[in-house]
Image (cartoon, rainbow, N blue to C red; front, side, top):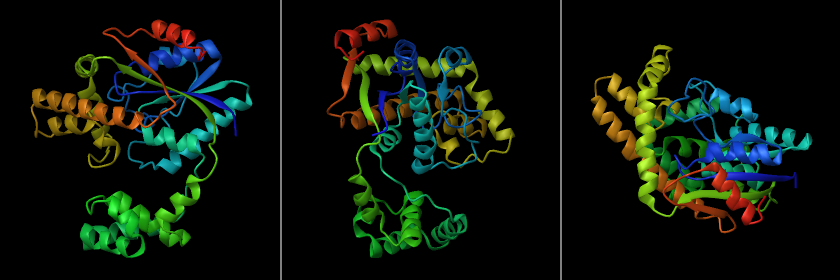
Length: 309
């Protein structure tokens, strides 16, 4: 086991950034982002990325490590983030893994290995086959070699179907076999998991709405316009992020500004519900369910009372 880390997770707009900075300052830590969209450069407002002042207070890692046109896999994230954590630990400091992407966090902590593709030509061929033959045909191809994995995927899940076929072609193992093999691996880190939440779900939704209004006032539309003017494909993975997809639709004339804002708020609330569902799977997590107000100092006092820090 590589060492002890802290995890601060929770739904969007739950106050993760403020608490992570307070905790890192208190324990001699450095923050490792676990957000699938904060890895992208030029996507600051819509991802609620830590500000320059916040990054100056505590070292941050895994922000701005990719161009928006890149398509990052979980495997690529784990390889980069684990290197950050190991470096932090080697300097006798503590990684504070912070974010709302549950799959990234679980994969980073688990110690699972990933068969990362080194054959972009193969992936391109498989994507070409999917586009030419259709999702049903490719889903049927996957079902022949890995019926268990196929049962979990819809024919429209282009990326995961291609990935499963790619793994089989490269390793001779099905994705199911690979997952079973790696699931037995010991955890990579000893983790103290903190999950932020609210006693009343309505408080979270109100915070989400206010955050979206703040993002619009801060220039989210202009941020998306700049990305598009740089040649970023509106269909790429990064531009499917909540706030970016709807803003691009507004700029394209498909939505009014009011419709875009309403859809961003609705999509954010739905995403928060999925995040809450994911983090409920952590039975050993310390849960901080706050009242109507959120205060990092109060959260820190709660952690002290619980004997966590």
